[in-house]
Image 1 (spheres, rainbow, N blue to C red):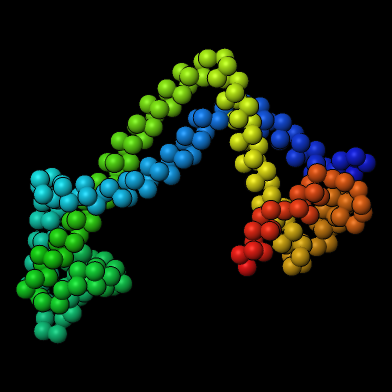
Image 2: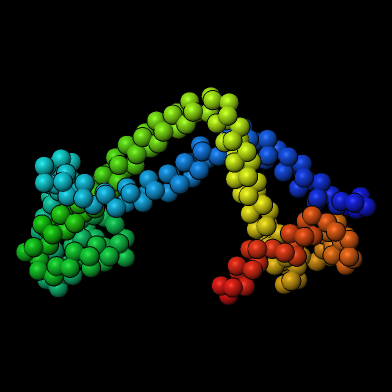
Length: 238
């Protein structure tokens, strides 16, 4: 659909853009950036520290011993049922009731072929792995609680009018940049489909007419279609 000056896709782009601008001003820059950056850092820090915390929990006998005893008992029972020629992963598979590939994975990571040590080493490996997972979530929850406090402080700061206005303007820029990135990705997929003849017929006719692809007329979406930074990144990588 062509409205002489803009196309239907341009109108949709502009209307959503206005909503994004209003939303960006209300949400602000600090809160969004803190959430985006902090969320990534929280997961990364939790992964880095979970191993250290798990070893500490093992040392002070917190959570770890109960898990170890449970799996040690299962391994002992499975070992008692083992027949001559059984592989270590067979004993693990029978003890845990897990798929063969998982039993092989655990046996490989444990790295013990001596049946006399398999119960202790496997139980230790599983107990420490589960303790690491628990430690990861403990750290994750604590850091997210800290993030919640920071966000509350930021919201208090935004009660100051000057801070709120500056933060709102920066919020507009941030949210609009995210919006442009999402639209650019959508258009990249659209162009990719057109270039590979996945989009054709009436669908292509509508897009070509709405974006004025075969004319020199300016369209916002046509500009993003032709000057697509995601396409440039893709071409650079490929």
